[in-house]
Amino acid sequence: MINNIKTVFSIKDLENLSGIKAHTIRIWEKRYNILEPMRTDTNIRLYNLQNLQKLLNITLLHEYGYKISKIATYPEEKIPQLVREIISKKNSQNYAITSFKMAMMNFDQELFFNTFDWLISEKTFKEVFKEHFLPLLKELGLLWQSETITPANEHFMSHLIKQKILIYTESLQIQKPTKTDRIFVLSLPLNEIHQIGLLYLQYEILSKGYKTIYLGESMPIENLQDLTKHFENITFVSFMTIQPDRSVINQYVKSMGQKLLQKNNEVWLMGKMVEHIDRKNLPERIRIFDSMEETMETI
DNA sequence: CGGCTGAGTCGCTATTAATA
DNA sequence: TATTAATAGCGACTCAGCCG
Image (cartoon, rainbow, N blue to C red; front, side):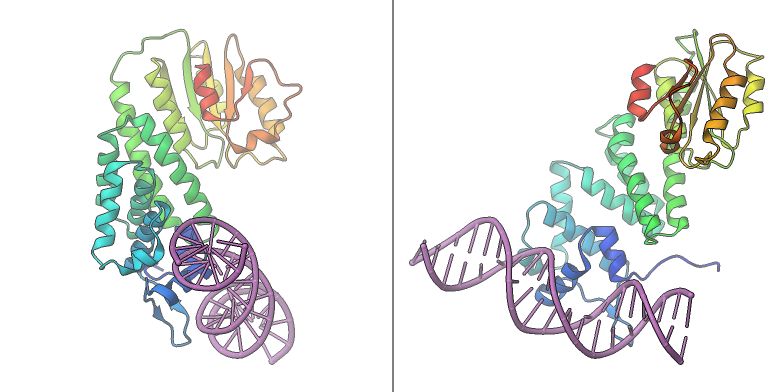
């Protein structure tokens, strides 16, 4: 199928995207006429992007204490207007997420860029990433699981985020490293696709003044081993979010230890799968981190 | 206090959709 | 086709806040 962009949504989709229970959405429609979805000829509700947008806006107002009954009395154009007013004042978090979600469902790059520009005008890139991108990505994972969004939606969004990380990374890379006692090599195991975390980590490491070598995904240990001939004091950093599988992860880690830990090299591991690593008999220079914050504090 | 209102939820049934 | 899961719609319920 070529055109599988989602333009109609079920009530369950709206529940997943807005956090408002389907039950409640129905009762809002019945009592306050906030939405008038189309129906199938068998009476099932079908919502379009405008409906979704309106519900997300209403949800935001609702979170800020506006009564549903009051919102319902507003003329159509007042709702987005109020939303803009609120967000220009305080806590831009919710609005940014709402905007990013709309951009994603609509494949609207411009909305993504505008929202990002607006955030970056008052925050650092680190803040934007931690306060907005990370929560968004986390939520995307859930939305994908529940099949509210397609892989196309998720890839669209994660690609735009990657692009931003790379832009900010490049601006750091053109500077000379200030610390040369270590070098960081970043990679992902075979078949591991989730590289956003690793890309961002590179940005953080560079911002601390270290040199990095980014190898990216599908990097067998043997290839990492080649680097030990060229450099000393390497810290190998790898994310394990879905690979290696828990059945082989300890074998994998052991192999890393044998092949990579020459001289003062270290191996740092993080990501969801590290919880399956047996931490008892680990070599000293293999370190496991449960969060990115923890990692950054160590550098 | 007691009753009222608004908002959200619960429980139920019938209908529709999805899946084996 | 038979069975299971989702959805719609309804009345009733809970809970909080308000008011006389």
